[in-house]
Image (cartoon, rainbow, N blue to C red):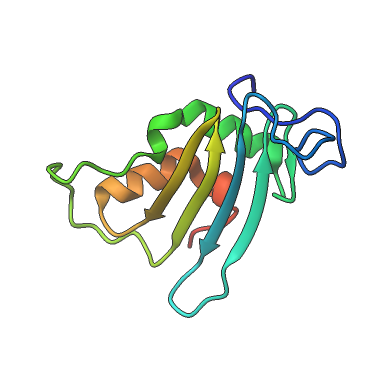
Length: 130
């Protein structure tokens, strides 16, 4: 889990005692909506050590590290994607990953977006798919 980082001291919220994010800078807010009209679920996640209020912080940090920073990049506009609808689920991830700003949106609206979603999986989004 060296790819994720957060404070090692403090009150367990992934911040150093002085309130600053740790030097390696992974502190993410994950908001997931299971479908239109559903109430969003929001989690804070910090890594190395894993923490926050995410239900599976260690597994989520491992999944993000395995996917790499590119998972937060949008699908290029010139990429051809299969027109397969994977479901109404959406997610946003904001904050910092290894010190870099993150502001990413995820959906399951086509094959490219489904691929991005699956790289982080139900572990990061904590949303079982049916």
